[in-house]
Image (tube, rainbow, N blue to C red):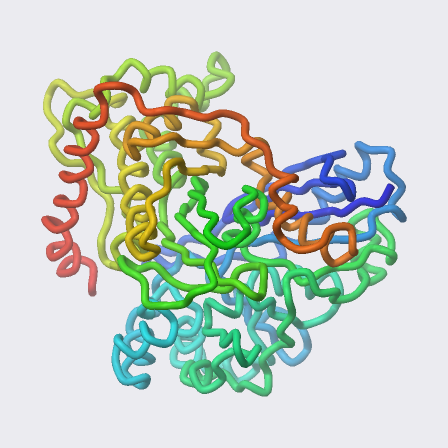
Length: 505
């Protein structure tokens, strides 16, 4: 039996799986790493930490299975998107990578749009305006603020490209990642004139590859570090949005899903490209014949974890509470729907969709003396559901179709109470994907299966995806949560101008 090793490389942790050519998982492992936060709000990464996590997880899997290393025929990465990893002429990383969470380049985003002819031209070309969180403005930021780094620049990679480079020695950029920069499907190339506005020398841009395209075998060094052999072939890979689309079984035209991880999104696969509402963007699907409309939010489980870390720190550290998440979710179940009127804005690091606003921030509203921590935590969970409902309804409005049920996946789906909140807030069934936490890795593995000839086309991804549970709306909660959703949207209109004054600098 032949096998594929696949990695889902998220913001603070990765999941790795070993899966056979029929989609059966033989082993799995996880590894974590950190982010570098500055006082000014910038967020950076050490990309070497990603590689260390990859090799650690690979060795753990191989040590825990009887699968011979020579039988691992393929390797694929599914990763966080929109990072900047500057590579020098000597092949070394020039500076810490700039995270997708970082919004330092708002000024540069405005400059690029002005050179394009205005925000309308950006929307016409990419389906969305540029923000300080986007890749090209960040490259331009390096050019303007760190010319000593920019002069040494050979190329820039994202997370997937960096890991593929460490595995094979090849400099590549998969077309899914490239679509965040600006990719012309008809020409099969990036918009080179657009990329040049960032200051990037297009002669230095890496080779573009498809998600299931063969890049090459592992280098000898990489094979030794991972506990594999040079018989393992690395494929092009993809970003997390496209990988989870496959892993959820929602990879064919018209298929939609919601993802609830550190960040989150609502996405639908379609053959059309157009300007989307509320910060939605058109990017390439892992299937090079289709697009993925994506409405991406900055903080989902990140907001939940932030609250736990700051308001339940003692419980998290207590040896008497083996799982703080189960503990707090039990408390939340005792709080009535609607959190006693408490409302939370989850935009802790700005937002991309459903509001495209780098300056907005998080906060609690309508707190009274009768409220406790549990009310506030439930308000956080409800706010994340409101935010993703707003994204999903934007998707449906742009698509012109309403879905009867919503397929959902990601780490947040482990919480039964949160899934019931989602069903009640959305007012429809929520289909929870089995193996939800590793769905991105399963999607990546499926790409390897296509590349190795084990599978044909993307429709077969449905056979690799199963449902774990279906949640239906609770009777009597629809009107309450519709009112809460309306107040949630109203709250943004109330706070956006003060936040812009306070945080624009």
